[in-house]
Image (cartoon, rainbow, N blue to C red; front, side, top):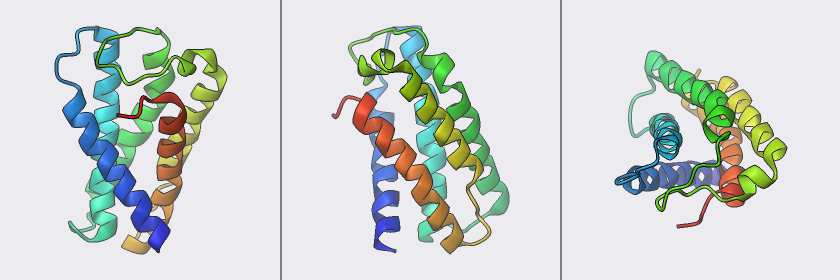
Length: 146
């Protein structure tokens, strides 16, 4: 249970940090990437809040959040294909240096999102742990630590 709380806390912090970092981005490719990551963060926060009991577990809203996660995860390789830069970008060059690993991680995230089970809070928490591992693993390797 403690690992679940830790994973949900990390996901919430990532979502909040992303929202603050996107102002003033000039490159449209970087902006599109950041917007997708913001959508992922908001959906993750919604599910995390449901898992922690901060908001009611609502099946339709959980399904919408899951769909947002899986659809945006599927877009990640296309969004990052162009190694565009911007002073506000949090993407590390390692993305393009190890493209197959990066793209594979996006696929793993998509699968973890599709596997989310929001039957009840406990099950949601458990399946969120796998999703959180995909986010954290990619951020550690491919995102600037701010």
